[in-house]
Amino acid sequence: MTRSTYHYRNIAICFILGLFVASCQSQKEQQDEPLKVVAYKVQKEYIKIRSEYPARVVALQEVVIRADVSGFITRILIEDGDQVQKGDLLYEVDTRRYRARSQEAAARLRIAKENKKRVEQDLARYEKLQAENAIPRQTYENTLIELENASAQIEAAEAELENLSVDLKYTKVYAPFDGTLGFSDVRLGDLVTAGSTALNTISSDDPMAVDLQVNEDQIPYYRDLLNQQNEARQLNDSLFKVRLNDGSYHGYPAHLRRLDRAVDENTGTIRVRLVVDNPEFYLRPGQSCRVSVKDERSGKHLLVPEKAIKEDLGEYFVFVIGDDNKIEQRRIHKGATADGSVIIEKGLSEEELIVKEGVGRVSDGDQVKFE
Image (tube, rainbow, N blue to C red; front, side, top):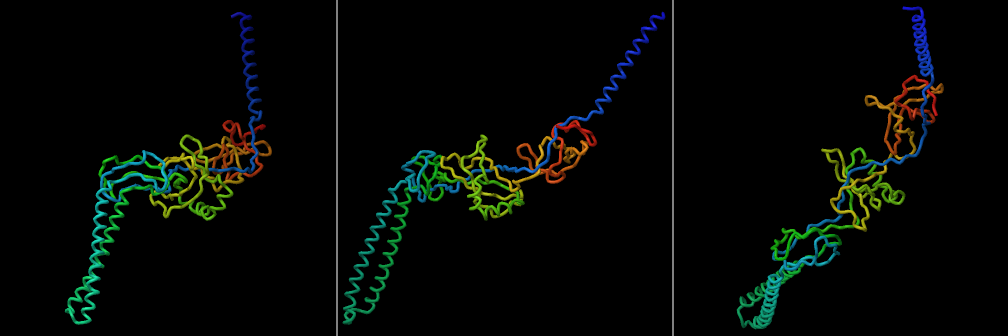
């Protein structure tokens, strides 16, 4: 190997060593430079916390309409799904049999009254003859008994006529209250049985009930609301909101009406009933929805952005920036979440600085530069 070749090789080695040293110095300078993060000052802010529960729309009044008499349906005066008012005629059962029986009972009543009139005339005549000892006393006493029987026959005939008149009246089926009918369960000519055959179902439309289940540990909160329901209704119409399945909210606020009698021992929940106006009839019985409830914890709380919290093995941490810009990893107890912020129940104080952005790049003890 010539001297010239050695010379060029040495130059190449020196160049590579120079680059390596420069790279190490650059890395050391980068390691020594504080990490840049975005900081957030912890402070108390008002937060409105709302909880959502699955719920079901229920009619406050719902009745299965049945006929009180047996017979064939001769008239149907409504269409499926009609909205009706109390007293509207809905169905009619064949009246001929009941009208004939009623007329027969009326005739028997007239006969009984005429019979009593005859007995009263006989008794008046026998009283005079008895005073003169012109007839046996037994004849007079038998007439008294006959008069009592005639009076009893009139009472029985009157009761029978009244009963048949009621049956005749019940051949016409009326709406028991304002509401909406379902699809008719019978058609013209169908034979119905008294007290058994369902003709239709009617339910009230406005207002409507909304039922939801809440945990038993929330009973005191709802009980207090119920005790103060008038004040709550006047001061806070946003306490309960009904959200429909398409994501929209019903246009009218709901109000607390009742708590159920008992807790369901299988689920540990209790049924809560709300009432909501429904003038446009948007809500229907059986409809599923969700109820948004303003939480009792709404108010001023220590808040931090949700992205500033790190989770590790079921525990939650934030990175607190100390006075010397040094990172302290601190465990916290977090509460409810709303609008991207988390309530801090324990572990932080107001005015402390925490890392808001860059959480994944820092660790306990790091030096940082923050914005």
